[in-house]
Length: 475
Image 1 (cartoon, one colour):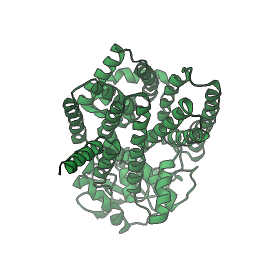
Image 2 (spheres, helix red, strand yellow; image 1 turned 30 degrees about the horizontal axis):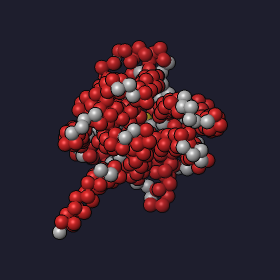
Image 3 (tube, helix red, strand yellow; image 1 turned 180 degrees about the vertical axis):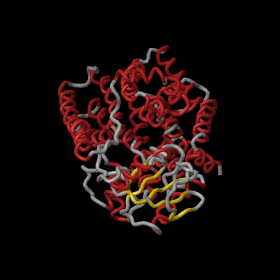
Image 4 (cartoon, helix red, strand yellow; image 1 turned 45 degrees about the horizontal axis):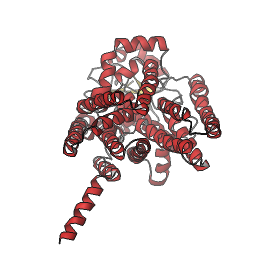
């Protein structure tokens, strides 16, 4: 009996101290409502721009070099954007099972969970195992928790780059295996193509390049492979994206502002920007431990952490300045920086000797982080009503009929309408010349949203369909 009890305690102790267990637990938790439509309050518009492209790959053309969205009016919808690897994976899965938007949730959840495992392995290479565990656990319950199941490329791309970092550092500071170098290239290219700002992670290689233990040959080979990686990234973002915009006449993708403007915006909106670091990313309790971690890093003269602090802060500040106002008003821009915050918060916790107090700190960070994200797992009834939009429009129009929707700049209703056309403001819908111009371009119907994403208005036109959530006018 005593032997059985000891084995049971040993099993539980090792199980709960294994980050793979917690990655699995939180992955299972996030399966709740995994088939929900992309109608969460937080950034549903960003998700539907992803699903539009994936569905168009499936229904119109699988040409990955020409992604298209549904809000370009009478145009083809082809436009410049992030390299649509994530969208294309949704399309490839749809070839087997038929199109479903929630395939994107599953893909992101799988890749982002794997990314946390490699983040743990990466941190463990240079810090104590406890610090690596705390960092990965904090990342699990951070902003990452909800966004790693959204149909967005942010945690997806960050995860790919962290996997790349693991293999890249393994090539430099361990046996120079060509396999490690190849995996560094593949995952790095996929990650940066999927989301350009995650390239800031590359500054961390500066630390290894200053290491005398890394031979000149390895540094040279690594640099050549990195240069080869940068070529397709440069081509896509700085040659192909502008070409698509010019050739097909529709601008959609934000490539940043001039630094001068971005710096002015950052100064103007600095309270909102700072808010992303302490409220959005790891919440208040995590932020306090992060400050403690930074303090101890400098007090104890931890050179690696000091280098991570200065390099990451410098590189990510450039991203903030390039993004400007957009960074301030879009909280998900902080996602690539959360792993850095998690490392410092973990370092702060690692200074605590009492394991019971460590448990309390992790529990507090978890509760605060998860409770503030649970709303993302529930779709409000008014938003959920949009899932019937396509079926109701099918009663009065064909799929290829162009429509205009009063959702202002939000594309979400157009995705659920499963049509193409324009999104605009209520004010424009009262402008007879505006509607006449759209009619000449082929716009046949006007969709007025009464509650979600729009406001009820009355037009002097024939109503073809109406319910409590929306109505359809003939243009």
